[in-house]
Image (cartoon, rainbow, N blue to C red; front, side, top):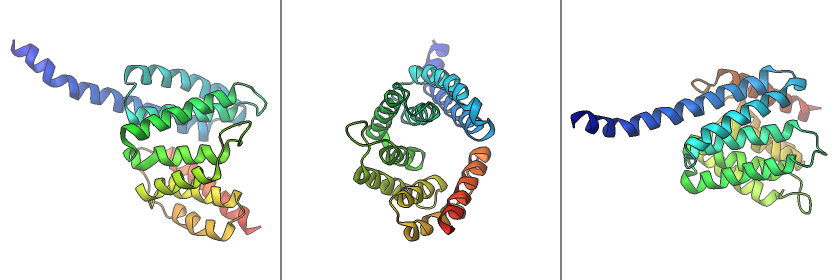
Length: 208
């Protein structure tokens, strides 16, 4: 009887450890594919990682953090496909659904990453009739991401990129400067290094 009670008490802890390990695995592997593989190898890398993300999300379908990372992997895979690939938009739409569900479950988890990721989809995806792209919604969600994590590298980078695409280069400089000075994230060394390079690329781009 005592063993049964102990197992019942331990189950939530074990479940927590499982999804945290799964999330950290997806974070780490995504960074490796994104920043350490050649562009010619990224499609296969993201495809394989998406299969792993599918399995992990299946075990915890209502975990906001896993939904966010499943969406990031899926959107990255879609981005690695040819622009004329008819399935690419389908993957992006699925990523959008994951992020919307994550926001319903707890939008502020992972420093508001769901808001930032959803906002980035809204400005990078074509608008109607091809896709769901929407500048107003992009602005809304990216700002929510900044509210949740005002000094975060991703939140500032994506808002700066959004502003640059709108032609608002001077406004973008403020957020690029904050992204450049953003603190390092524990366990995210590869991702931070890669994103800092992208931040510098944007800074150089608007200097020209």
